[in-house]
Length: 111
Image 1: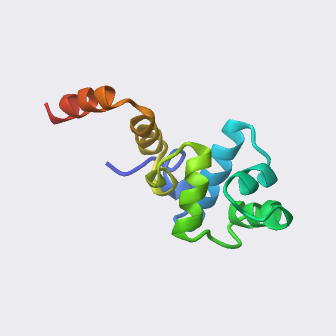
Image 2: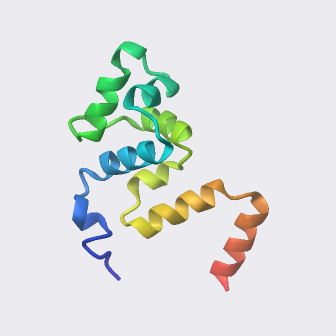
Image 3: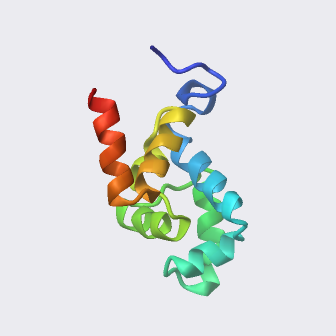
């Protein structure tokens, strides 16, 4: 079933999906753009402008930088590419789960 326009990729467009998710995750943790960039290893003098460019979809972070941002934001890389909100939430919940919780979830999915 396709994602609904209000919750899925159609609302943002595939190009802006990473930008949208990056901003959403940063704001949920209450981090400034500069703080996120610095924690992810960016030079403090460019941290804020670079994160701003990523969130404004002017530039896209390469996979290595996005991986560093994902660690700080406590999200799996898949979160940034999830086509709809439910999938983004699911991969984040799975990512944050213990091994036992993951096993239980996978057993439930498979049955």
